[in-house]
Image 1 (cartoon, helix red, strand yellow):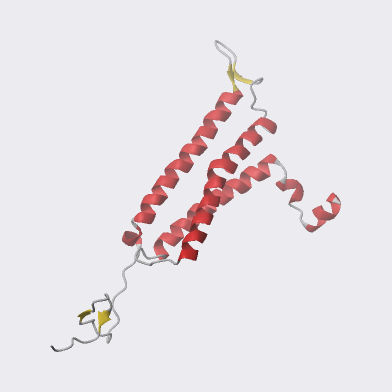
Image 2 (image 1 turned 180 degrees about the vertical axis):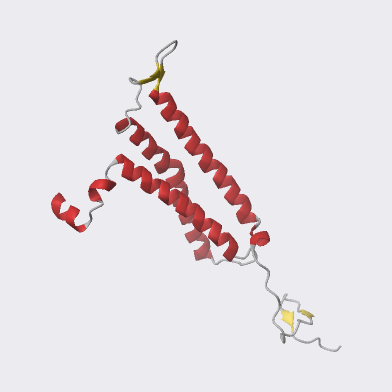
Length: 162
């Protein structure tokens, strides 16, 4: 059965390995940040989304945060423990004190969380200030300027004489 699946998808054996999972979770993390940066320039701040668009956005952001705060560091810890053998029984330095590789593994995991939290905060700020990053469009010639607004906030094409 595995040979048949490996013929259909040659990445199956590679994907199950810790290196493959860590590379894919890193790629998803970077790709998600790039998508948000692209959306900052496209979605205007005064655009009122519908309820379903807001819910879809919330689900996507929640899933992305699950990847960057849960899957990405977990894949690093799994890789460091299994393939790199950075466990508590192997040591970087033995004299004058014993420093296990596990300490370096944990420092790198904390660094992944720090990178994710910093990028998360920076993307929040850029998303809230996205009007500054969008190009301003010049008004089209021949389009009449509104004469005012109605009681309901809609633009008027001409003022009514009272």
